[in-house]
Image (cartoon, rainbow, N blue to C red):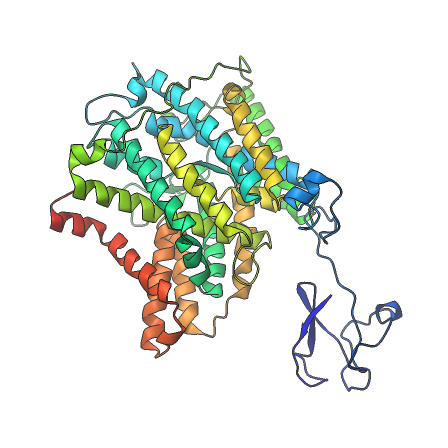
Length: 553
């Protein structure tokens, strides 16, 4: 279907029709313009109503698999409910996308226990009252998989979008380092529950959705690009391809001492090239095939080279997170005793009302905008954002807020929407069916934790690098001639990876947009909620001085 015309005179370069999502140059029958690429006669079956313009058939885009993505009528009840055909997808793509998302974020089942399960609280106790770190790690691993599975299933069935949820990295570190060090674990998790419930109320009142829609379209594009750069950097860092320097003149370096000299790094490079080639060749299942094939290479390399674990940095040439090897057993009984170990009022008694409120505000702001950035970025990549917003965004945000509270109630920290969902989208996922697949795999991971733990970072992170590239291609949609929005967009894009924080990039972009537009004399263009959000970000950036001024923290 023809979406619109530029309205310029025939013969000019901008004489375009928007065909599907692509602008194509066309000519009038009685004009001086000519088609830049001759179209077959069958493309012009009849005159348009104007009498001079011809109809152009819709061009249907394709996925990386080369299959058409055009919408069609639903084939069955599942198709109708999830709108699979309507969004130009297929059940096969959704399954592949769900698998790809799971394998790119399954590391959280291993990593979150190392953050939550090994740290003692202010009373010297491990989470759940574990007798030793080993028991704490086992409990957190099982419960992390359970909550991620349930919440991702809920996102698929209720939200109906290909977004997966799990314990938020960064938020869990904040809970372990800043909250648990000043109170008991149940008190810290109670603050997480409280934060999630407050966000749920903000969603139900429409405030969170209103903030989402108040963000200028080009800033939303910048958010997507910034997240793409961010997850690419996450991939490079987690794989050890990029490392922080110790007392050097630059903050990061290539590999070990500026060179690539380990087997795991070689495996990562093989994975990046393999995945990139598969994507470039539009191979079906490119992302998932890349992850599984690279994991197989890692197992073979470890079997022959006996590389071993990095052991927390003591062996810089070792594997990150886990050592790839065939597991001795495939299943293990999950320990879910952490469920329900939280206290809503405990933190207020332990550190005082003011300090507890500031802690909750910090959690809320980070969770609130991290999710918004992820939803915008992944939704834009999937082509699901319409007129600057995601249809049914309220359902997505409500499930996300429940996940935050649910993570606290299960003592595994706030659960949030993951940027790794972009891996599934890159595989063709467009609906909640992909999330159902991912959620089901997380529930299986409760019992199959030995199998989940055979994929090291070096095998999973190549997918993040390639998906980051795919997201970054949207930068072409930003108008860099309008400095009033281009500079905030630039700050949004670069500060996400440079500060290793989606929230920091969002804050810099929002605050700079409001300030620049105001001093341009164009304050009327700023949505009122952008003023409020920018003010909140100023408080967020200055939270430490504010705490010091108030004598808390």
